[in-house]
Image (cartoon, rainbow, N blue to C red):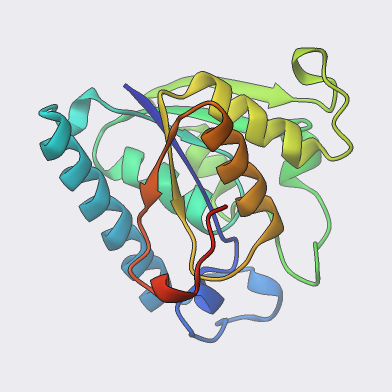
Length: 190
């Protein structure tokens, strides 16, 4: 079963914690491990509910800093298959400048690309699947939804990109649930 996730690049903000380094070039370790734990616990509960093994999952990461990167590390640390859905190209995405004064791409890009259980790496352009996406990240969101059997989110505050992917997943009846234990009373999913 192929599952993807959408969520925040600023996981520190999601948990009410401070960035360790300006512009998000490193992680607040407490935030990283809390998000990792919540995602892994959610996946284990999902597998139990579906009566499948964790090893039956193939994870899809959009290679952004934060939730996408944590999801890739869930795959790596648990020996799961991994698919990368990269907006634009590896070169462009890995080396892009700050977005909203923060690093937007995975910090450990090269380590994830070198993972030995990497099934596929797809560079998704604005013209993905004959579309005319105004932002390459939106095309990447659509690709992730299209190749997945189900889509999780990790959302604790309003986020345009996360909302976009959730809506795309809902349109295809693929949205599963939010794996964040934080601020659930404030979240809108419609």
